[in-house]
Structure formats: structure tokens, C-alpha cells
Image (cartoon, rainbow, N blue to C red):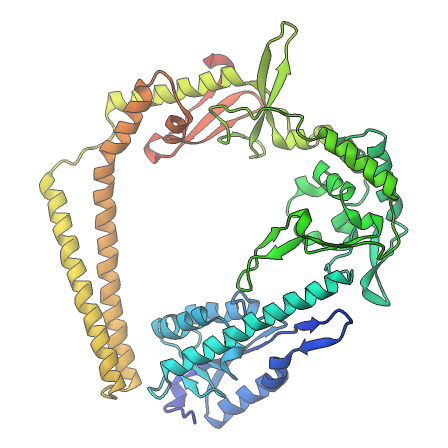
Length: 538
């Protein structure tokens, strides 16, 4: 039975959560539908339970936080994040949940919040039905760990059942995507079945006919953009995947995805992606041989002969580039105007020589739409100019000796001694905190005195840690000066510059349309605003 002494000093945040997961067999029979949620009750039931507890104990409520339809396997939840934000702002000092599973189902995260975060923030945590209260010694750490482990086991077991259920449905050819494939709609009578979207299907057929006639994916994308054909994301509804204006036009990747999609043959392909594990939201693309493909599940838009012809034509275009060119500025040269990387384009000369030029990737994606300009510049001239600029900067630094050596060994020694003293002080404070907890558990302190002494010790420790950090940075700057100068001298004296030499000094090279080059170095002392015109430098 949880009791609250001195309730007037508490301001509570009531946290409720409910996930809406269904696990189905292939015949659409529900195997598990919110089994644990039925035990914990609806959001309204949780709210009523928590409000009743606060009323009985005369606890003031700051706010109620609701995550409806969010799994306990993640702690990245909208209202949970708002709760944490309000704790950081010191708006509340008590968190109430119906039971520990409503708070979350990952034992490592639960341990962090209950054993570290809430204690540091002076927040008491109570899971009423589980009789867990961090404000009382009666709350057993072993019991919290056991319940956390059990709750996480439930998520792991549910994840396994979900995977098995999906695998069964995949083998039966059920559509399990959130958004329909471009050219289809979800069947109103069966959400796991596709019907043709007759307004969009002709566009898909035209794309395949254009590809069959010899048009490349880039040419098709340009035609779609010029004709202002809506993007697949705008048709099927997943516009949240588009983040900037440059991506609003069609591109070759969109076209290639359509041309290689077996859904247009009337097939259903499941298992195309897979979550890393039940704790992570990250997914990985599965190889084609590991996917589950079931044929003849809906009306095809493209016939097999057309599809196979297009695949053969796409295959002939793969691997045209037989050589990946390696060049000094690879990966570090950018377009100044749009911020995208520059790529390398080979050009054959009448005399048989091959010259290489930089080109802006934004421009290259859709040249006819003028999203940027080519920024075309000769590889050899640009590289020579960049190396010349860097060597001039190195010479300037070495000649003027802008790097300051450690003036007095005594000063460095004094700082190191002060660090040792501060570290010893932190160790003593940690011992005092341990003793404080021990005395609290023996009930030699009430909550108010404990918090006052604990906060005071924490502030002392924070000051010592801050001082140590400042001293270490100061020593680090002094000791790294000679190392930085050594790197600069090595670059300046090298006759044959390697990529390793270059990236050891340079973070980024930018070039403008009018051929002005700017270099951003990895060391701040080198980053003076100097730009050089390529035509003047070479």
C-alpha cells in the first residue's frame, strides 16, 4: 500500500499509455489484440484511476500526458518527451503511472529513469498497481528489475508473434504495406488486397512503354516533371517523405523503382524490408531472394512480356562505368550555391585524351529545370589551385609561427596538479553521497533534508568537474599546438600529396559558378576567410 506523507510538496504528472497492436493469423483470425492493454485498461480508465489516487492523497496535478497507440518498446513518444521536458523545467516532482508496463517495456531504459534520471531531478516515481515507489525503501530494486524484465520479455515475445503472423500472411499473398503501390488502391472490401486505380494506371503503363521504346529513366523522369504529373508520394499519401523543394520533381530513382516493381504483374512481394530488432526503428532492405513473392493476387497493370523486356533493357545499362575514378578532392568538394557535392564527368577529346570536369549533382539530377548551374570546372586546374592555396596557407602559418608553444612548463604542471586535487575532491564527494543514501535508507533523514544535502553535494561535484574540463582543454590546446604544426609542415614539404595528407587538414572545399574557391580547414586557426578565383590562380 503506497502512502504519501507531506502531499502538499508534490506536483504530479500523470502518465498514461496504450498500444493498439493486433497480431493476426493468415486467415485474419486475431491471435492477440491488445491482450496486455485489456488488463491495464483504456486511456480513460487509467486517467480515472490516477486522478482518484491524487484526490485521495490530496496531490496537486500539473498535467496529464497521453500516448495513445504507442508501443512500450520505444521511449521516443510525443507525450513522454513532453513529460521529460516539463521535468527538466522543474514543473513537477512526482510521476504517477497505473503500472510499470504503462511507463515502458525496456528494462535498460526503465533502470535509467528510475535509478538515475528521476533521482538527479528530484522526482519521485510511483507505479500504483505494482506498489513501486522510489520515495520509500520498501520499493525493492529486485522487484523493479523483475517486473521490467518481464515487461521486456512480453515485448520480445509479442515481436516474435508479430513476425510469425506477418510471415503467414505474406505466404498467403496479403498486402501489408501502409501505403498502396502507385497505380493501385486498397480494396475497400479487403484492406489486404489491391484494386487498380484507373486514373493512375495509364501513367504506369506509359512509363513502361517509354522504357520499352528505349527512353532512359532520366529522360522519362524529365518528361513526367515537364508534364507536371503528380509524384507517387502525392498520389498514395506518403508526402512526409519529401523534405525539400529540390526533390519535388520526378527523378530516375523513382522511375527505376516503378520499372522494377513486380506488383504491376499482379504479384505481392512481402518482406522487402526488415526491422533490425524490436528495440530499434531502423530497417534494412532485404535481398530479392529472401523476399516472399506470391503471384496472381490482383489484376496486373503490366503484362509479363513488357515487364521482362524492360528488365532486360535496364540490365544492359548497368555497369556501363567500368572504372571508379579516384581523385584527391573526392567527397570534399561542394557546390557553394546549393551545398551538394560535385561529381566527376569524363569527356573524350578529338585527340584521344580524356579530360575530367566537376559538375554539380543538383544540376545533374534535372538539367532542364535549372535547379542549380553546372559549375563545370577542370579537375586538374581545380586540384592544382586548391593545393596551391593550401600550401600558401601552410607557409603563412609556418613563417609567422602563429601557433603558441607552452610558455612555462611550470604553468602546465600547476594545472595538472589542480586536476589531481579536483579529482580527489570528486571522489570524496561521491563517498559522501553513498553514505548519504545509506543513512537515508536507515531513515536518519527525512526527504527534505536528504534532497537539500544531496543537491548541495551535486553542485560541488559539478563545479569540480567543470573546472577539470576547462583545465584539460587548456592543456590540450597547448600540447596539440606542436602536433598541428607538425601536420602542416609535413603537408607543406610533401612533393606528392595524398588524400590522407589532404583530409588531415581540409574539411571542405567549395566552388562557385564563377569559379571562386573557398577552403574550410579542420583547424579553426587556419579558417580565415580567403577565397581565390580559379582563373586567376592557375
